[in-house]
Image (cartoon, rainbow, N blue to C red; front, side, top):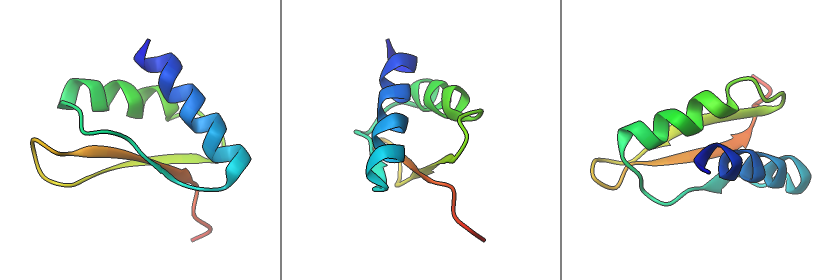
Length: 64
């Protein structure tokens, strides 16, 4: 279910061009999101914040 949610968020980011900040989640759930979206072209993820409020940010790949 979490992988499906992550893919939906990635598709929303790709279509809107706007980053999405997910609700805080534990490290195991964050890893599922990061691993699921690792191979999605045009999408990058990062974790921000401090435990227990650490959250995943799903964004377009920056043009660095």
